[in-house]
Structure formats: structure tokens, C-alpha cells
Image (tube, rainbow, N blue to C red; front, side, top):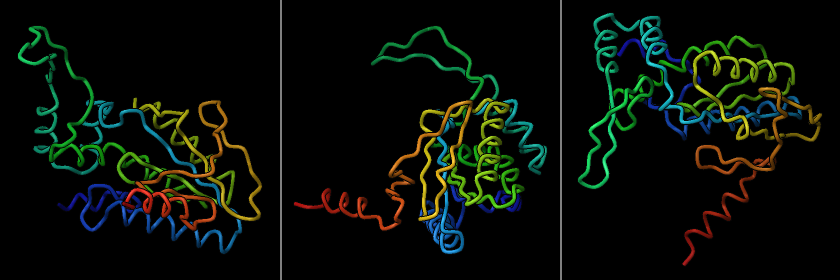
Length: 228
């Protein structure tokens, strides 16, 4: 549909001709390019807590309208999301009581991925405005990277404030930092008042990333799992 043109070019999730593979190719190619020019690179990986379950319906409807989706489709989504409830079922027993569902998009549904991309799209667009900051996203998996510590910290602060303002909480303890390059200054980064821990490897969309970008650990793990 035409409104997919409004999706950030750095979003690779749930889109035609984009995938986790295209996201990895994009980010790793950018890593190598920055390193060849600057000899230093820091990458921060963010983790949203139960992202699809925490999408606020009122925020989502407002974003659908601002995204350029026709009013009749926005109204349909508003009706689809409103007055939803759930009950507890154990085997053949179903609890007679129910509770409302004020947030979340249904995973496994046709509309769920689209709704989430619309919800998080304004964050990616705002990040694009920060000079010297690089972005890669796959649905709720977002990573920021730069050779410039100030640009990267600005991006971290923006993600943190956006998450708070949009009721989509970050798992700060799972936010990871990977450092690359022989001239890396080991600059400290913070999020939510806490220092982001530097790690020696990160699993990114199934691929184990190491600071030397040789993927030795990943290859050895795959070989071990497929050996008989």
C-alpha cells in the first residue's frame, strides 16, 4: 500500500523485500565502513519489554491518523482494538470474569506487524535527524551505532525518552554495548541513569556478533549444533 512509503528506510521488519538478512547486511556493512574510516565504533542494542503487548491503543490510533492512513481504515482499527477483553481458561474450565485489554497488538495476526511498525516509526524518523548516528531496526529490535560518543549518547537519550513518553518500556538491564576498533576510547554511556554494560559478544537477529567481526563463535556454535 502507498503509505508504506512513510516507513523509515532503516526499518527492515515485516516489509516486502526486507528481512532480518537485509537488516544484518545493512548494519554489518555500515560497521565495516565506519571502522575503515574512523578506526572506532560503538554499537548499542536496545531491548523493549514485551513490546507487542505494551502498545498503547490511544497512542496507536493517534499515530495511525498522523501516518497518513485513510480515516475509514483508522476508524476500523480503532473499532478492532476497542472493548477487547480476556478470560482465563484452564483445560475445559473458563473463568466467568474477564478483564479489559487496553494495550497490545495481536501477534500472529495480519494487522499486528503493520500496527507495530506504525507505532515505532516516529522514533526511527527522529533518530535519523541526529548527525553522525547510524540506525538499524527490525520491528522492536533497534540498534544505534556511531564513532562519535556524543551522537550515540544523544540517540540513547532519545530512545529512552521516547520509550517513556509512549509507554513502551525498555529493559535497561538488557541494553548492551559492543565496542569495535583499535582506537576505541571506551567512552561510558548511560541510560536511565545507569551505565550501559560493555559485552564481548551480542546475539543480533540470530547472528552472534563479536568485536573482530569474524563470527568465529557463531560458526563454531552452528558446527557444534549440526555435528553428529
